[in-house]
Image (cartoon, rainbow, N blue to C red):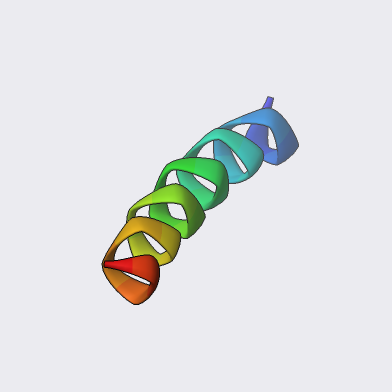
Length: 23
């Protein structure tokens, strides 16, 4: 559903941001 799609997109964006922030 929409909530799952938002969660998936948010998770990916958060993971990418976290990697950039840490490195």
